[in-house]
Image (cartoon, rainbow, N blue to C red):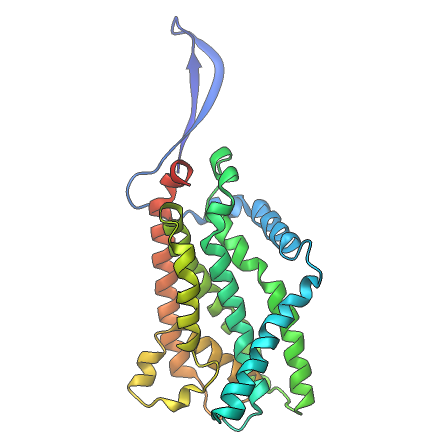
Length: 290
């Protein structure tokens, strides 16, 4: 959107009425991101994050416990089929904690992607009635998932205590890996949310995309099963660097994920930049199409 400066209003005779009008017009072509505009609407962003947190488990019997149940149940299934039956290597770590440490950032990413892709359609009444930076909507949805992440993280600490695993100083890198997961979820979510406004097929195709992406990420298995140069190409999946980074920071896996994190970080930054530009390009059509 382009904001036109205040202009005076004249009556039919051409005399100045003393009134001023602020005109807001659709932007043309590719539009730059105005971070100052986002900052000006920061209170709205915080309000929408709080709103999403409040309604996430509204009228559910177990409430916020679902934030722990979902990755925990998946971990039990993985431990049975991949750990016991398939005998998948786990880099010398107990398989339950090996898989759960990867499922926490993955669940954060998958839920952020799933909810951000449908965020514009879910807030269509707000989009049609009020002017504000539309980027606020998917950003708030992704950020709201941080609470679920923290609750699930407490369960991981319990597992680490049970298996006598003490985190090293590498745990200081954990916020960086969480930021990388957030960037990836937001980047892809911006692409899909803009597409979903026009093509509602996105919400039907998304579960298949998330399932394929999950098995393309080293959650049930270690990335060490791959050798170079395939391992570097594998790291083009941004969640590879996130998952391996989490295991290294928390569980002290033998091999540092430095090169993989670098490749994943570049891929995530490109996804985010492309998502923001495409979102801004399509933003002017949202109110008419949604």
